[in-house]
Image 1 (cartoon, rainbow, N blue to C red):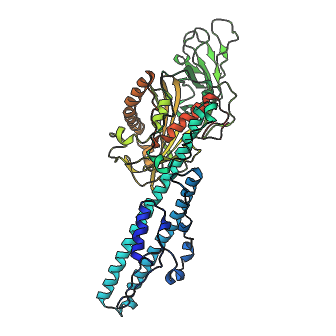
Image 2 (image 1 turned 90 degrees about the vertical axis):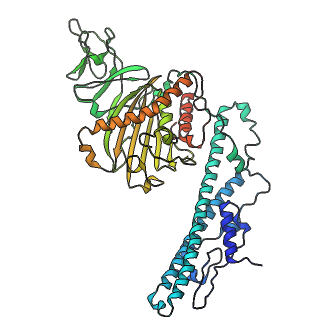
Image 3 (image 1 turned 180 degrees about the horizontal axis):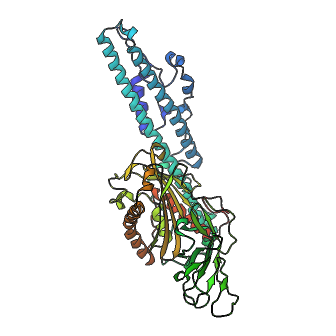
Length: 542
C-alpha cells in the first residue's frame, strides 16, 4: 500500500533532519489534484518524473539518479574506516540529488504562480478562485522552502562527519609519531571500530606538549629567509638595529644603495654600531671611528694602520617592500616567498612592534580566532555574538583554510608569517558567512621574528580593498598604530600569563579542540622541523 504524498514528505523531512538513511522511505510520484475550477496542488518531487517536469526546459539539469537505493549497509553496530568512507560518499551524493530536487520543486511552483496570474487565464476565473489557488501555492512554496532548510541541515551534518573523520586520521598520525616503533607494531584495535557517534563524544587527546622554560632555538629553524624590517624604514643614511635568534644585528645601505646586515658589535671594543652613523655607505663605530661595509669588512681605522678585520654579516635581500635576512648556517634558498597583499589591495599601514613574548606563543595567538568575542570586546570584535560552534576548515595537508562562521581566510606561512583576509562591511562589523560574500576586505600580514627566548619582533602590514582616500589622510599611521596597540594589549596580558605558567611547567597545548586545528598544525610542523624529518607535515618542503 503506497504512502500519500504529504506523508512521504513528512517521513523524508524527518529522516533528513535526523541524518538517517533515506532509503527506508518509499518514493512517490509528483502528485496533482484538480480543483473544481482548474485548481491544483503540487506537493514535491521525490521520485519518478511528472509530465510537467519532463516538459520543463531545465529538466536535464535535474535528471540525476536517486541515490537512496544505494545507501551502504553496515553489518554490525560499528563502522570501520571503509564503511565510514562509503557513508560519507553517500551523504555527498544524496545532498547533491536533494538540492536539485528542492530547486526543481520551487521552480515548478513558481511557474504555476505565473500561470495563475496570467491575465488571459484570469478572464475565465473568478477572483475567489485565483485567491484560493494562490493560497494553495503559497502553502506549497512554504513546504518547499522548509525542505530546503532541512537539506541545508543535512549538508551541515555531512560536513561535520567529514571533519570528524579528518580529525580521526590526523589524531592517528599524531599518535603514531609519538609512540615507539614497538607500540606502532600493535595499534589499539578500537581505532578502526569506533562509530561516528562515539567519535563526537570522544574527549580531545593530549597530543602536544609545549611546557617548561623556553629553550634555545633549534638551528634548523634559522634556515629560512626572514623578513625583519620594512623598506620604508631604511633610508640611505639610517640604520635599523634588531635582535634575531638572540644575536644583535644592524641593517644599513651600502654605496650602491643595496641593504646589508652586519653584527651590531664593533670588532675593536664591542661597542654597539647602531650608536654611530652611516657615512658614504659604511657604518661608523662611535667609539674610535672604525668603518664597516655591508659585507662586514672594516675599511677604515682612523689613528692606526689598517688591519684585516671583518665582523659577521648575513645574506640580505630586498623584496616586496621588506628587508630579508638568512640567519641559518645552510646556504640560502634561491627564492624568497612573496608577501605582497592580494590583487586589488592597497597597503595602508606598516608597523614594527617589540613584544615581550616568545614568538611561538604569539603565533599560537594569531592563528586562533575563536578567542576574539571573549578577548577583543573593546576593539574589532566589539558586539560579536558568541557562536555555538567554531570550526577551522582546511585541506587535510594544508596550513591554510577559513573560519566558520567567521568570513575570514587564514594561512600560516613558514617559518613565522600569518596571512589573513577578513570580509567586512565597516570596521568592527562582520558581514556574510565567507569572504566571497563580502564586498570589502581587510588583509593582514603578521611576521613574528624570534628576537630572543622572551621577545618577538612583530612586523604588521595592513591592506584594504576599499577607501583608498585613507592613504592621504594626515597622521593616519598614528591612528593605525594606536588601534594595533589596543588589540595587542588585549592579547598581551593573556599571553604573558600563559608564558608565566608555561615557564613554571604548565602545558599551553593541554587540550586542543576543533577550532585549534591551524595552531596544532603549526606546532606539528615546527616539531617535525626540529626533529629533522625529511618530509615536513602539511607542506611540500623536504
